[in-house]
Image (cartoon, rainbow, N blue to C red; front, side, top):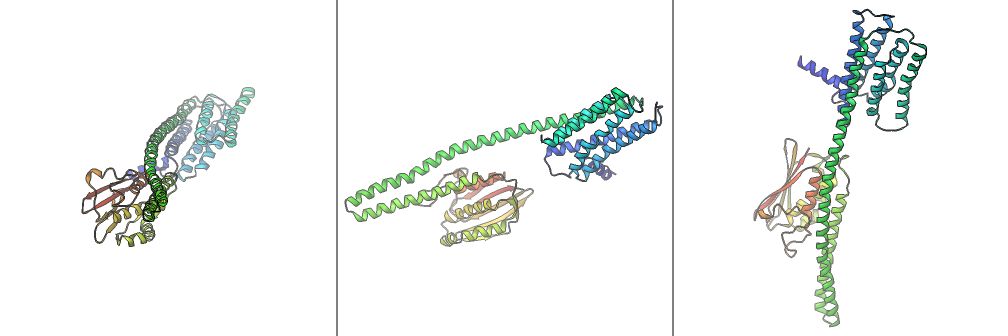
Length: 429
């Protein structure tokens, strides 16, 4: 019994038949319910004609009430079978004809005028785009009320029926129609305000990141440039003094500074490209195992240089951009091999699924990270070691943190100095 009731409720509300925005689904849900109530209200007036004495041709009045009941019930049926555009056209073009016919044949303007006004208000929400079609709809609906009303004012109704209860029923039901419009408008406004607040917060965060990024970038770029200028000056002196050995030494340092500058600019360009990569609305489900294979193939030379070993388990699938995951995998794998003093550097990559979260783990046997630095390493340009010990720009883990943040995920590290580190990337499905 409960399943039957739930099915009826779902059928009327048409739950799950549309993949549109929540606001539209909310609007359609209540549009269906009010359509059903209107259909029931009209049918109840039809039934009441059998127990109430009506002046005039009762057969036509019953026909109109049945027609109205069917018209509004058809909206529910069309919505349920996902014929949304057809349901909207039916509401905007066919529904207005019942009150146009009722005005001309039966007379009376009160309930019909409320029905016409309610229909126009709902059309404003059904067709939010203000194009030529929208204005044609508005003119069409206005004429279907104005012309019959003018005819009745000049000629009188064709038949005329006196049945006061229908005015009350139509008035109450039209209040429901107008209420849908106002509630939907309020929800839409609240949603826009919330989106504005969210975008404001994102903008503030991005602005702070930009200031931090600009400062750090300028600071880190100055260092290799200063070194290049300094050693080129010393090179010039050595050449003038005809000291070839010193000149070669100074040239080597200048070349080293230029290589550092080149690496830094390359990493900065990666961050800039990443930040301008657009939104993630169009991403598709990807095979992470294939992405890992692509990553390992691109890193094969570096893995050989470090004489490293990569262990892997089945990772599964995730909705993402392949380029994001390749960059994430590259940085975390190379990080585990680079900061490693083991005779056989090793990084294990595996996946764990916990409820609605995928956890990617990168486990290495490297030098480890002291606890006091574990919260800082994910900032851009954060280096824990001097370049003479380990090369790098300090930007790799910052890129990882940024990528994971794009997917509303988290990245963290657990580490024991001298034993290794475990980087965990938590990605919500």
